[in-house]
Amino acid sequence: MGARHYSPEQIEAWAGPRVSAARLGAMYGDGRTTFIAVDVKDKPVAFSDMEADGHVDMLYCHPAQAGRGVASLLLAAIDGAARQAGLSRLHAEASETARPVFERAGYRMVMRRDFEIEGVAMHNWKMEKQV
Ligand SMILES: CC(C)(COP(=O)(O)OP(=O)(O)OC[C@H]1O[C@@H](n2cnc3c(N)ncnc32)[C@H](O)[C@@H]1OP(=O)(O)O)[C@@H](O)C(=O)NCCC(=O)NCCS
Image (tube, rainbow, N blue to C red; front, side):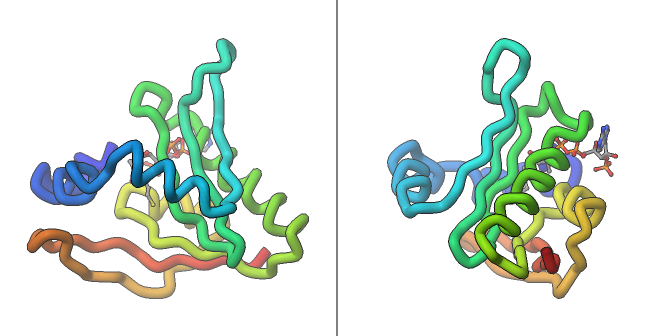
C-alpha cells in the first residue's frame, strides 16, 4: 500500500534490512499495548500499538484486507484504551498512506517531518488527537 506514495528506494530503506524479527521482538517487549485485528479464521490481518505516553508507533494492514476499515477499527480501539489508561492525548508519525486514516479518526496534522534513512530522503506527518 505504501507504494502509492513512496518510491521502491524509500520502501526498501524503511522496511528492508533494518526490520528484523529480533528488532520487532525487542520493540514489542517494551510494555506497549498491542492491537491485532484477525479475520473470521483468527488469522492476523492488521496490527497497531500504543505506548505508555500515548504514542501510536505502528499501524499496518495486510494489503489483501486493505480499504475495508480495519486500520480505522484499530485506531478506534486505541482511543478506548487511551481513555481507560487515563491518557488525554494520542500522537503518531503517519505515513502519507496512513495520514487520511488518522485524519478520519480525528487526528490533526501538526507538521511534516522530513528525514533520511541510510541516505534516502523520507517524509511523514506528525499527528495528534485529544482523547
Ligand atoms: C495505512 C494502512 C494501515 C491503512 O489500512 P486500512 O485497513 O486499509 O485502512 P482503512 O480501511 O481504515 O482506510 C483506508 C481506506 O479504506 C477506505 N474504507 C473502505 N471501507 C471503509 C470502512 N468501512 N471504514 C473506513 N474506511 C473504509 C477508506 O476510505 C480509506 O480510503 P483512503 O485511505 O483512500 O482515504 C495500510 O494502508 C498500510 O498498512 N499501509 C502500509 C504501511 C503504512 O503506511 N503504515 C502506516 C505507518 S504510520
